[in-house]
Structures are given as structure tokens and as C-alpha cells.
Length: 111
Image 1 (cartoon, helix red, strand yellow):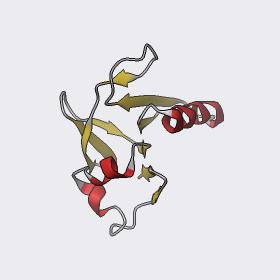
Image 2 (cartoon, rainbow, N blue to C red):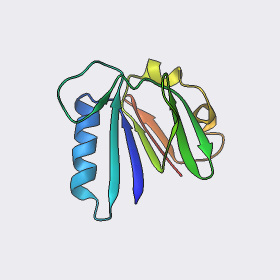
Image 3 (cartoon, rainbow, N blue to C red):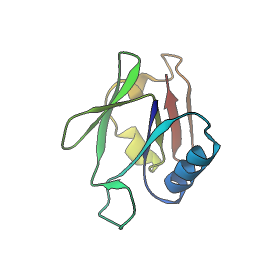
Image 4 (cartoon, one colour):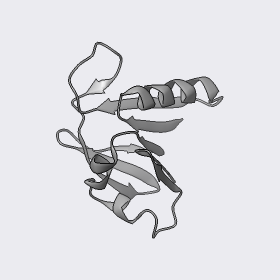
């Protein structure tokens, strides 16, 4: 089962999660993290992503608290300044020639 993380629970992240769930035919573990407070939705809040590293062909995502988790695909829908503050292997994505697109605050990282 593919593990997918969407960082950011705003309009873009929520729409991305809904479309992935609707359009994916294979089993999918979909997680949505946001650094904001609770909204009552089925989203993990207070999950401030700090670092993204490539480990054993998976993206290991670290947050301010708790243990890192591994995902097959990471979608970043947070504002560009926050994306630029992330640490780890994500800072070298383009030079590693990994699939990476960035525009309007959306980044897709898959391995």
C-alpha cells in the first residue's frame, strides 16, 4: 500500500487529498498534516514538518515533535517561504534529478 503525505490542510491540500482518494484505484494510505490548530476535520494538526530526507527509497519526514515517518510520496501545499525553510535531502531534489515540481507553493516529491 502506497503511503502518501500531504503537508498543508488548506484549500489546495484538501482538494489534493480528495482528488487523490477519488482518482486512485490502488490501495492508498493518505495522511494530511498541518501545523495549525484543530479544525474538527480528520487531519493531523500541530504537525510542523521540519526536514525531509530520502531513506531506503522512501521519504522520511521529520516534524517538531514525535518520530519521523516514511512515505512513498510527499505533496507540499504550504507557502513557498515555508518550503524553502525545510531541511534535509529535499534541498537537493533538483540536483539529484528526482521528480520535483514547484509553482504556486505546490511541490510534489516522489521516489
